[in-house]
Structure formats: C-alpha cells, structure tokens
Image 1: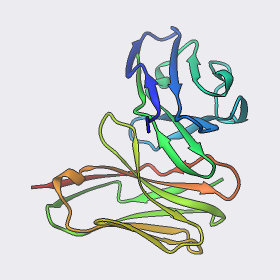
Image 2 (image 1 turned 90 degrees about the vertical axis):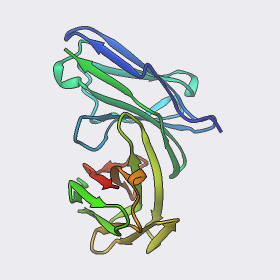
Image 3 (image 1 turned 45 degrees about the horizontal axis):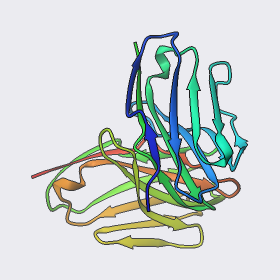
Image 4 (image 1 turned 45 degrees about the vertical axis):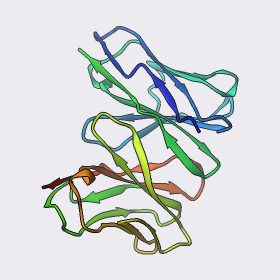
Length: 112
Length: 112
C-alpha cells in the first residue's frame, strides 16, 4: 500500500512570498488533515477535510492560509503572504474512519 | 480544551536499559490514544494505538498502558537500543471528531 505523498520536501522562501504544498493521501481514505509542527512542539491541526468538505479549520489563520481538496483526493495548502513564524514542518495525514491514521514525511518550510 | 503533556521532555540512557515515557491528558472523554515515533526530518510513524476501552497494547519491546480515568498513559520500552533514538509523541483522539491532540514529545537518546 502506498503511503501519504507530500511535496516538496523542503522549501525556503522570503517573508511576504507565497508557497504551496501538495498532498496525495492513501487511496480510499476519506479524511485528510494538515498539521503544522513548529520546532520543539507537537503537531497542531490546521484543517481537516472529509471528502471534499471542510470539517474543522478553526486553527487555520485564514488571513494568510488557504487549503482545498480536489475531487476528494489530492489537497493543497497555500500560505500567502508568509511570515517568519510560519517556519515549520507541514504534515499531511489521512485516515480511514477513527483509526488507520497515516502521516506523510512532511514539508519543511523555512521563511527568511 | 484537551491538553496533552509529556514527561520528560528529553531522556538519555545507556543501551540495554528499560525506560518509561509518560503522557497525561486533561479530558478523559477520549476515543483512543496513540504513541508515535518521529525521526529527525521524517514524518510520524504509529507505534501503538489503545482504544478507550483497553488497558494496554504490546508490540515487540514496546508496551503502552492507558488509565483513562486518571488521564495517563505510559510507553514502556524494554532493553533499549541505539536505534530507538527518536522523538516519541503521544496523541489523543477526542470522543467526538477525528483530529488528534498531541503532546510536545519526549526526545530519547540511547547511547551505545
């Protein structure tokens, strides 16, 4: 079974620039999540999708972050404009129901 | 709001020692609890999943226990090896919803 695919693995941008991350979940997993992990912290949920719809985006900074899930499969997370405090690892995960949670390898973003 | 705390934040032990990592959570109305391993620059790998009705789970040298009423879980690692060096994260899934609440992790170093 293929895992959760994320790209790019690393990204360095200047503040105020924009950046986008891509995620392809495990086939058949209806639920997709984006987590933000700042150095030394545990992952924090940014947004959760169930198929095409958003279930929880309460911790997503909507003035600069946006996310979409295309046809209930792939997802993109965008930051525009980026701030220094957005430097983090962005993890995508998918799950089948309440269990079977699988994480991708993440995208490490550095904002300079 | 669910708060997850992990103690200690960092731990260094010589190879062969048995060790215990601790996790506590403030809201006992959980669906399940998971222990993850994270290697530097990598995503999260699920180690053990304990349902709220269970008391413990075992996988090889790993044993995780859950005391839901007191809001505590422990991860026991027997006969530690240098390859066990990583950050161990505890995550709680609430009684409703799919998203996980993570602790900050315990950084483990096993020296030869």
